[in-house]
Length: 422
Image (cartoon, rainbow, N blue to C red):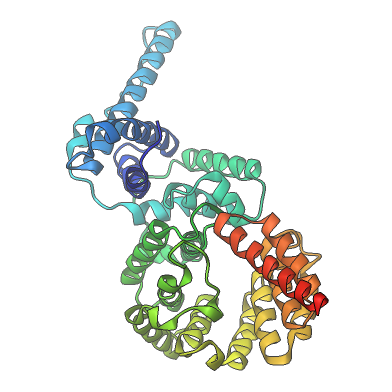
């Protein structure tokens, strides 16, 4: 049976909260996730036929708790049999899961789950992967694309992360405030990746996944309320708001992508722009400079331009130069190349892109091919640009991006064909 999109979206949104509740009550991260997945399968089969329960969260918690308690009791019975064989003086530990708690009202423990997934016992990459899986609800394939690694590699990383959480014996409780900064960098990176996957889905038929962007913004607002004086928290929230403000203009009615330069800026969400811009001004004036604050400042410069041609590319290029200095990455170089091309000409941007050809993380990525094609088009090399767009279209796993890139290639093919006929 195919789960209706509405039910599927609802289950995806509820899953992290249900998992957080079970981990808080029972412990055992891995077992709790298995129980939640079983409950989600039950819901996907029953809700389309029987209707969504009045309290869907409570329903999922009850079913998942029942599955978990059954497993606990089965394991306890097995241990008792083993102890009986070991001798009459041996006494197994008793397990009191408190199954009646399954009927209590669920609390939003998602933030606590977020900090748990960013446990110091895990490597940074495992922290990111586990949080995106447990809190963001992303599939292993989606996380692998976000990290630019094979899916099998990511599956092993997530499995090892769960095992280390179990081995650490960590209780489900929010760390004391003095312990937050150590985990905050990873938490913010997780939320950043979660938002990016929602705003520009790396695979599937949809260009935007509003459930992921909304959840990323909700969680970031939550962290900002807890840590209002941390500049990078405010910077990340501002970046999300300023970026999400463009969403109404990013797609045509048929779902096709509209590039930034061609968007109807009157459709941008001015309320989000005002909130994001105010956050940028406030945090830049009083907090140490960080990468999210710089990215938010770049987004604010774009938001200030009423028309694409009014964009202050010199200021954006300067901000990218500073960002490349404090937080270098291939993605920063890619974006900086576009800004440099707008200021110093497409050849300068293309020269900067050449440094990414030897970077394993970016060399085969569709975005590098797409940006190079765009700059080649600006430079007047239409045939090379057409080939670049087609290469980018072959590499992307996003259907809307593929359609857009193929359309760009077809447009250039038509142009070059007409030029040859004349």
